[in-house]
Length: 463
Image (cartoon, rainbow, N blue to C red; front, top):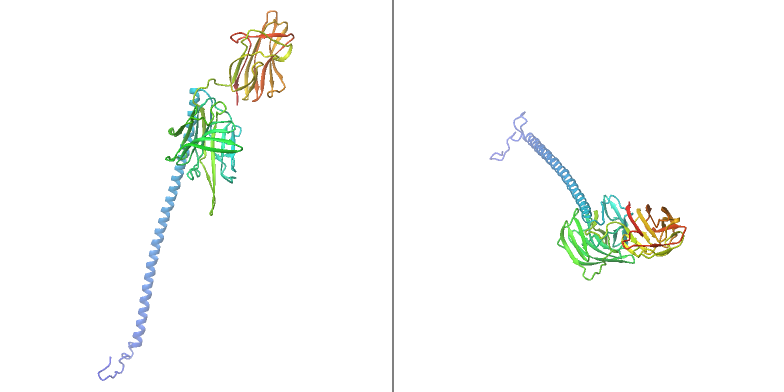
């Protein structure tokens, strides 16, 4: 706004007088407008941010809600899966018990089942090897206690009552996996065991492997030797592991399907009446590293079942002795156990110890109620000196005899025979023997069929 002659006309930057339209006013108006424009823009921006924040918060809330719902759903699914697995395991245990009962019904013999509602030390004997804790039951499953273990080791558990034949089957239903998937750590059933676990046959499983072998125990240490094994398996909670023995041939099955078998040609594991105990092995492994000490446990067991798979030659517990020789054996007058050997033939015995055949000394191995019959045929008539039948017991072999029953009085000139039947409770280890009371010395004789002079007994009830 400069004229050609470079003069600035008066009022050129001032504007008309009184209008307030000069440069100062222009500048003032410009900054105020700019300020208002900027503030307005910033406010609009913050409004946009606020709206965006609201949207983000809403989206976050929705995402959190969805995540919570998913977590609840996952928890429910996990609970359902756990419940289903528990049901499956319980069903497997029930089936194993039922099959064992059916097996016993079909062939006779002995059987045992335990669903581990508690750890029953009256029925189980344990043998620890290494610095490990004993067996305990948690949530209805048996295994090495999960505390108090300071090094590698195992616990063998044997049912205290043996089976009756050399054809046997033992099943365990697997419980908690624990760390059975690590280091091929194995636990499993035991068969063909001696009462002190000095020899036995074992099967052990991890989540992927199965092994079969024999073991020995000496000086508190248990040693395992593997015969055969495989690692192509998939094993988990609820599976049933069955170990069978027929003579010196052994088979391992998983849920009824054959997995391993072995014929112990050299009979390194003994077979016979002293090796009919059954049970299981539970293992523990400890490893140390720069990061600390790690503990590894094999499978726990939800249940245990075992049975004879062949008919025993005799079912039950008892004995039958008799005199076959018809010649007489003199006995002294008085109240006595037999003062000279009478019995010469064993008709049958099972699950008892025959200490002395001649005098009929029997040691019972099971506590319970026994029905016992005694009969004598004398070579001299009773006359006026009656014959009584007496049952004697002693607390152990070589112990002091005590008369516990008198019965069967025979008196008269034609009375040559006396007999009686008793029902008595005998504790395990008790020795019993037949006896008599008479005022005269006389001889006891037999017959070919063993029907006149005999000593019979049977266990009829036990806990």
